[in-house]
Amino acid sequence: MLTGLAVIGVARFLQQRQDFEDATARSYQVEIAARNRLAEGAPRGPASATIVAQKRARQNLRDEIDSETRDTALLVGAGLIAGLTGAALLFTGLIASMRRPLEELVDASGRLAAGDLETRVKVGGLSETAALGEAFNEMAAELQRRAGERDQLETMKDEFVLTASHELRSPLTSVQGFAELLMLERDKLSPAQADTVEIILDNTRHLVRLLNDLLDLARSDAGRLTIKPSPTDVSSLVEDAVRTMRSQTEARGQSLEQRIDPGLPQVSVDRDRIRQVLVNLLTNAHEYSPDRASIEVTASRRDGAVEMAVRDDGPGMAADQLDHIFDRFTRGDAGLTQHVGGTGLGLAISKSLVELHGGTIEAESSPGAGSTFRVRLPAVTL
Amino acid sequence: MTRVLIADDSETILLLLRTRLEMEGYEVLTADDGVEVIEAMRAADPSPDILLLDAMMPRKSGIDALRELRAAGVKTPVLIVSAHQDQMDAGAANDVEVSGYITKPIDFEALFARIAELTA
Image 1 (tube, one colour):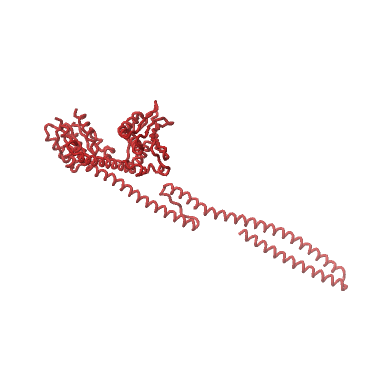
Image 2: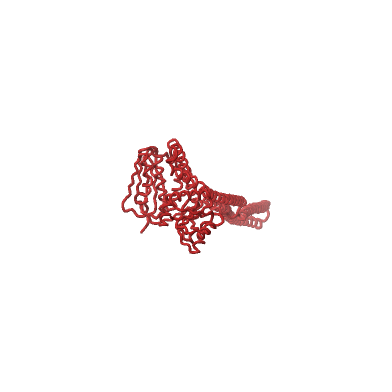
């Protein structure tokens, strides 16, 4: 509108200029006619008066047009400034109307990526941003639907593992029980028969371990892995785990040392579960290290926590293997470790258990330099 | 001689338990489910010194049978045998007095130790 004013101002200026030119031309004609009459000998008085009057009239016209020109210039200037301001405001408004929905979309995408699948945006603004908002909402709804389906499948999977492990336990109890029964009368068996029963027993125990590990993982996934923590002495916990492993390490000539700092605070743990973690770490150190390797367990204070570390001087691991060491069914190089009888679930379960206690577990290793696993558990504050 | 009443819906498990317990010198009574446990407790003379009940059995579970026996004032020690550790985690038998839990597969050395301790 203000731009229109400027245009009108310019048009008016041109019109006024034209009028001024016309009036000036007319004035000159009148003056020339008066001068001609004077030259033809007309009376001097009236002709001179006309000439003077015309000169004055032209002066007035000039004054008038100058003032008009100033006004018009002001008007045009004001109009232009107003027009530019208006355009700038319009532009800012346009950007703002696009920016708000876009910013909302950026925020919502962030929330969606962070896992808030309920996130939706208000659809509005320009048709393009509105379409973008609608597309976003449809995508979020689809993600939410799929996440729901996936959760349902996860629940079914957890239930299945729990039920399967329960159903498998009874027949396993029979197989293990009767094989043990046979071994009780070992002297009545031939050496070959005794070996056969030994194989049945070994494999049954492995199956039971696998089943227990799977059950623990399924419980952990289902949020049903529970612990009953109570204040526990670190030294007795470590000694207990070391005692459990002693005969196995000795059988392969491996040294198993424990070094427990004096005056350690107690830790609030489910004793059986943390013992399970330590035995698992010691079993790994034992199985993945060669005969006559050195294995060491240490316990020391670290700020408000107690750190238990299991260190071996075995073959160690490369960085890419170390990255996945706590994943399920991740095991050391099979070529190196054919005798390893683990389930590949031990470290995944250990991690779940330690984290359930509010602790951390980490591994350090490099090829040829052995491995160290550190478990940190919050100390009991007195 | 110490009398043990065992209850399990699996014949194989009953045979296994009976064999191992008899080898250890126990006298063994058996039941297929909770209903038979109640009947055996009524009929048995002398009454068993300890009960070994499977947690989950058809007709009547070991836990339900135990609840009935406790309500009737029976004070005999009871060990619950269960394949399902979750049941214990959830404390399904929190309302009745249980002497202990045994998980499958059975660690017989530990079981004999518990029985000896509870019937001493």
